[in-house]
Structure formats: structure tokens, C-alpha cells
Image (cartoon, rainbow over all chains, first blue to last red; front, side, top):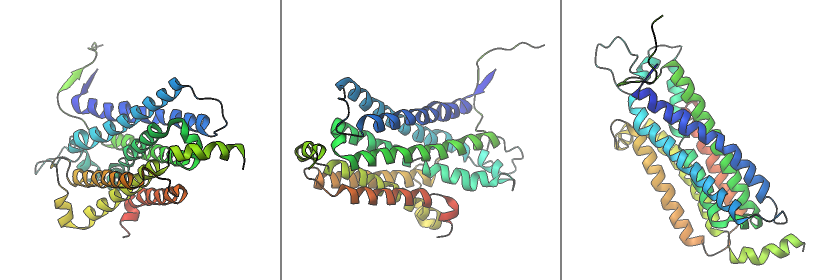
Length: 190
Length: 115
């Protein structure tokens, strides 16, 4: 059982940072809605507030790690140009997708949308974390600000979902692979 | 005046909404800047070349870096102007969501190709 270095980075980017961000979104939405919706609600403990601040900050860090590894580590492998005369395009995912009418839209729509829409995620969640850190429990007396934070977290979930969906489909149709192989488990011949 | 308003007013004065509104609007502007730079990079060859900050990543590196600079610059400027006062945050958030929604649409290639 082996994985290539490029495959490992793709997994860290998508299944590590990206998927973890998507899962974290639901927790943030529930907490922000449940605890901060009314100024007359139950008292918010300082430790709960601190937890939420750390949680949103961790989400922002995850979002930045996702887009930065995507754009600066994986994307260059994805868009690599094959030398003239290359027949086997397996190591050149973008060219492989564009070589067939049945897969070219995964690049022209999927990757073209994903590579840009994904950046709305760190912008939105960094804003949400900053506003929460500044206002904390007083978000309850600023309902419009609270609604804005919630709305931006929703949009970040949507944008991350779009990027995640296309990332998974692109990797299914033309996986980013190559580089040295890492052996995870040595199998046996049967 | 209900209990909620009576309790909220002095606190809102102590902790004005301007800083939050600045962050919200700047995020909307930054998002739209990303979409505008992406379209410009797609349509204009010169701009596309200019955006090529890091060759392996191509124009995406410049498009995203410039959008982040616009976002942070706007955030800093709006924070400086609004942080000590209350603003009409309803209008600000409406504007921010409009910009964010537009950026979602404009980054979608079939819509960007219509422009």
C-alpha cells in the first residue's frame, strides 16, 4: 500500500484541512445561533466564550491552510505543462481533462470556479472570527452584526462545499499524483 | 421601550458597532475584488501577465494576493474611520451580502464568460 508525495499533499489539503473545515462549520453555525440569538438568553460562561473564540480562530487557520496548500503546492502540479510529444498525460491532470470533451468541463467550469470561490472562505471566516473576538457576548445586543457573522459563515460553508465537491470530482477524473512513493504497508503476493 | 432595548442601548454605546461593520463591509469588498481581478485576468492578456506573481501557480497567485491586499486595506481604512462610533449596520450588511453574492456569481465561469 503506497501513496505518492503529490497524492499525500492532495489528501492533506482536501481530506485534512478542507473536510475538517466543512465539518467545523456546522458546529460554529449551531453555537452562534443558539447562544447569541437573544440578549435575554441564559448567561454565557467565560470559558464557553473563550472556546468559541478559539474554535472560530482555528477555523480561520484551517481555511487559510486549505487555500494556501491548494494554490501553492497542489495547483502547480495540476497545471504543469507536459513536454512536447508527451503521450501519457497521467502526470498532467489539467491537460488530461482538457484532452477529452467528456472531461474538459471539469477543468473549464469545475477548477476555474473552485480556484477562485475557495478564497471567499478564509476571507469570510477571518471576518467572523475577528468580529466575534471583538464583541463576544455583546453580539447579543448587536443582532445585525450577529446576523452578518452567521450569514458569512453560511456563505463560507457554501463556498467550501463548492470547492470541496469540485476538488473531489477533479481528483476522481484526473488525480494529482507523482513524486516519490511512500510505502504505508508492505503487502504480500498471493 | 422593552427590556431588551433598555438594556442594550447603554451597552451598544460602550461597544459601538462600527468596528464590526467595518470588518463585514471589508469582507464583502474583498470578495468582490477577487471576482473582478479573476475576470480581468481572464479577459485581458496584459493583466493576466501582470498577475503572474509566482510562475508555478500562474495568474491565480496575483489575483488572490491583490484581492487580499484590497480586503485588508479596506478593513484597515474602514476600521480607522468607524471603530469609535455606531453606524447603520443594517445597510452595511446588506451592501456586504450583495457584494459577496455578486462575487459568488461572478466567479462562476459561465456567468463570467457572458461579460
